[in-house]
Amino acid sequence: MAILTDGVNGPVTGRLGNVVFYQVKGQNRARSLPRTPKRGRTPSPVQVIQRTKFKLMQDWLRPLKQLVRIGFGNYAPPKTGHNVAMSHNMRHAIVEKDGEFSVDPTAFRFSAGPLSPPVNARISVVEDTLHFAWELPGAGARLGNARTLLLAYNTTESVVYYEICGASAYACKGALALRFLGYRKATVCHAYMAFMNVETGEVSDSVYAGLLPV
Image 1: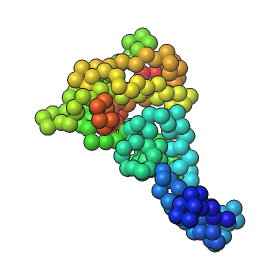
Image 2 (image 1 turned 90 degrees about the vertical axis):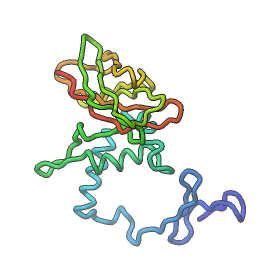
Image 3 (image 1 turned 180 degrees about the vertical axis):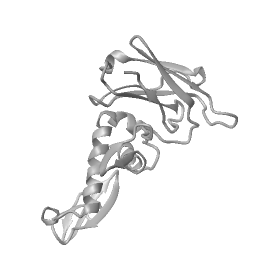
Image 4 (image 1 turned 120 degrees about the vertical axis):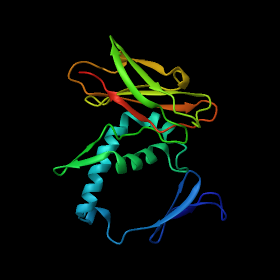
């Protein structure tokens, strides 16, 4: 049964015949029901692959939900940052080898936007601190009042630690404390960074800064 939530002229929610009405971020949408219930259909090989890739990326992004909402939040409205991050990284960061799918950490992004990204990002570890270094983009770069978004991702244990609006982009150095990451021998940890204009909220594409030494 469909319901007029605000009277005759208001939005419709629910089912009317074979059409389902719903809302996404204030927009009214409708879709038709499939002829055969989903539970009764055998997925095709293409659907199986897509579902495998979807779950893989969903698990990868689970610790990063808050960060990708910032990093992809303005990339393709009205879609959510998380949904855009899923779509982008499923297309660009999932690789196949011998029939098995995995995430390529070097191709993964937690943000995408119009700001100029860091150049030659790199890392070093001193005691319990992860140090980032980078170079500024060249002439004509779009930065404004940009600061850093720094991320360290312990993919062995699905633990992340990140900093929003860290050091100035023009400082060309920043740092994260590793005590929050569970970093130790035998754990695989990756580092990423991006720029964010604190006045406009615009971000750059994130870049891969390196694999932490094990």
